[in-house]
Image (cartoon, rainbow, N blue to C red; front, side):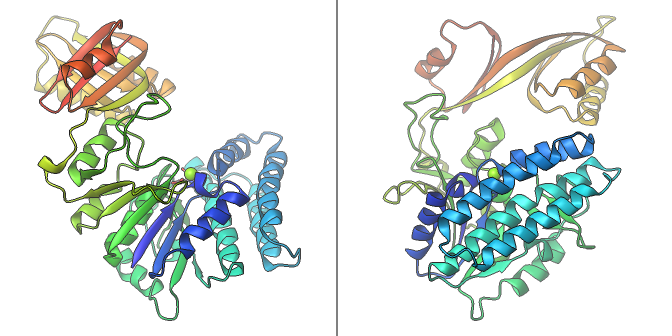
Length: 418
Ligand code: ASP
Ligand code: MG
């Protein structure tokens, strides 16, 4: 049994959906397809949430453009206007409009999940119907009935015990060979919709793979596999043929946007191989992530870029040392303001951190720290991480740039650059 995860870019147009069907039909195995929302739908739904919560005008217009986008795809795919997909699409949009007529709840996160979930509900409905229409019977599963989470809306935490009981019941493979379900969504025990965090569909596929102990997970993307840099940034980027789970976790940790960081852990526990491959080129084998030993990891330098970084340096006002108590306090303040720390450097009387620029939360945090410390910061910086660095790779990244901070270990070099 295989699990295939297809991202939003793979089904962003009628041609994309036809290509998807071609791929699925080239396999004979039992499979579960985990699908994201079409194209940039989640971004559009986020705009709708913001407008709804702020009680702004224009919500209806935004919903209408989203409807037109999907209806154009459906019109292109289906010949007969009386096909059941048209009424299914209309009722999903009716449900969405119904929610938007209500008064916003007191929780932004709750409203977010109840609205944003429509992206995946709509995409899976269209694709499931079109697959059936193209001669492949399949079963549409509402993942919210079996992938259970707590009620941390917008970032649902998986209830493994309950999901482990329910998922195998839902994906029973009796008389069904192909299932289609939503990535990114979950449900609470009281059947409220939750989401797993942006780009969470990879994680959904990993959760199902873990619970069902599948033979293989494939994530289909618009890149040839995992590259040693984002090709939009470094066009000469090369593909990594094979990497270990550990290396994949490291890459995701440092910010490589290949797969969702939570994806690897569940599949690594059950030693399920993960193939990251291109839906644009079926000849291309992609990247295999598996139990490869460290020696088998390809040691090509891997370049990871994080933009919009802020370097903060913190000193006790009385020139005392930075000690455990200070550090403990500082980290609790970072955590309280949910500021993501990407790099730390410590000296006797000062402490530097490189963090993502999260605007208001960051400023609140700096204000709080300034009560007890002298704080200076630089904005608009770049953090470059090089895995498996060598002199040439370092030169290539830092040449002609001002280095504000650097840190090197055996495997990893990091530079904060102006
Ligand atoms: N549609 C969701 C998002 O764009 C989940 C995903 O694509 O993985 O964040
Ligand atoms: Mg998406």
